[in-house]
Image 1 (cartoon, rainbow, N blue to C red):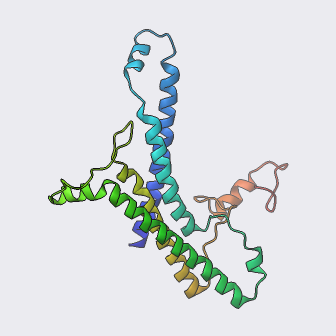
Image 2: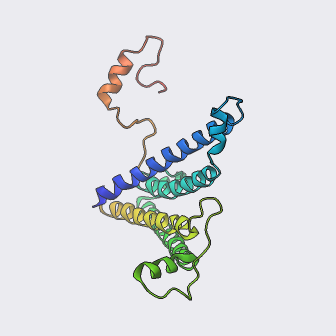
Image 3: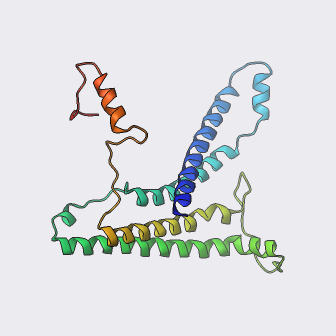
Length: 217
């Protein structure tokens, strides 16, 4: 189940990043294309409406940031200063790490709960009541976004979803540290998809003026 969640998290981040980049690219091409005096092409481009592109790209990047933060906890890529922690005795170091993880769990749990409360009162309860066939006449429907006219509660739901996922990742990291005493660590020199053998072959085939193992990569 955890592996499925890991792959789903990675796919969501990848699709959001790729989709937002593609939308921005098409929007820029459309904007400059409408200024070119090319018969028929200019008229066709002017007939297309891309007013929603910027809003959608912003929404996608916000969602990507929230899920990316949870991914960062799982992979250990968040920036941290551990000079003082590394100089502590082993017992104090273990306590400090667990305290930091606990603070992360508490903070993301609080943010997720506050975000869920806001989303619920911002129109999610109207959507749920309507879906279940309950009387929603006295429940506010909630605002919508200016261009896409999507319900804002759906857009803001990235906050509780991403925060609760981060909280879950902190719990995972804490449990692993309690059992094995290890924390996730990201090796900046390692590139996924390129194993050591391929790495050696690439450096062996490099010209003599290139740095060998131990040089800057």
